[in-house]
Length: 569
Image (cartoon, one colour):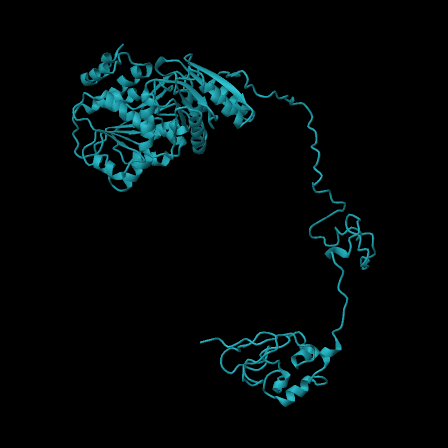
């Protein structure tokens, strides 16, 4: 069977002959005739089996006939999870439809200016290849209409669901006509993909070519595992692998974008033509990187999982998993970048001993046992594995570990417990206190000066000199009788009782009234000097403000024990 037997347009057959495509693959031989009938399809096939041509060729066949609806909207809409896959689909459309007159294929993906995409969509579009996020942006602004839509294609539907595009897909599908044709291509048709397929399609035909993991069981792909002690050991293994002349072009997959950039810089320092590819790069740079990979200017492409689906470079001979994927399904799509279209390839995974559980998960998913190999001179350090039945030994506690308490704490609400010898003493008797030896602590070790770490200060009376002065022998009643209505215990004295303007606080006790104040006012500052030329009883001369302020708040014009010069104006 060849493509001419599938019922495609002569224009498409001519383009296939130009591209040297004669015989369809298994998925193409089954999906193309079914799609030409207008039926909905659910297709599951292995990576690299030709799924792109399986949905693009019948879509181009439909575009060869003029549309009966008016407008600028697309006739065929292809949703892809990543920009790279969208670019690959657009290139396939241009290749297979090069003989179709005035065929317009538009790519609507992130990283491209909105103005350029609006200009492209201002004219009638035949095929639109888009990612859900950027297409939603244009739909919210009312820049896209689907009045002319005839075919809706979901490529790598499982990947789009993994990336969280389920709500966007449902909203996009709700804006499309009911009489559309839906083609869904996925690595698996179970789980959430099956639920989505039942909601989007009407009486679909189910086509499954082999198993979704058939790429891992392909004899063209040799798979090996290299165990590494640590991250530094992985770097040594990678350097040794890339020194092999058999590595024509390779893709090295990392777990994070930062790791991709760091590893790319390391390879460039080693003299390797390497480039990074991840989601933080602008679309123009990602496009230039892929073109350089196709032309052979780049030998090693360090990428994240964003590039695991959508890269089709025939010269890729090796795929190296520097970091194992988080899901076993991603492992299948990673190694599917090599050994495509019947070619041979090598897939090597660098795994640490802590990642052995992921290796077992991959083996269960792929239904095969992975071979563990070593490189001479870079073997991992031997590790003695403990049998599962071996008893676990208690770790020795470090010397600085917290010691066990020697008392029973009891309930948190029992305030009579947790104090050592409370139960041994009679009720009402207090623990004896010895200032010199300290009381017995909870761990029966004496603490000097009790729990506070210092002995209480003995009481020492103030010098008798501070008791002398004009207030000696006077009572509060005397002050109240002399100054009735002037505030609490207010007494107006002459200026001799206040500190002079030159007193900076170094006067001896008894030099003025404030240094000789009675005991009931001993907590106040030594002295406040009055304003220059002011009266002692005037506003602002008393530190406590014992009299009611005349106008506004009381203002102290001096510091304790000294005079503050007037502010210059």
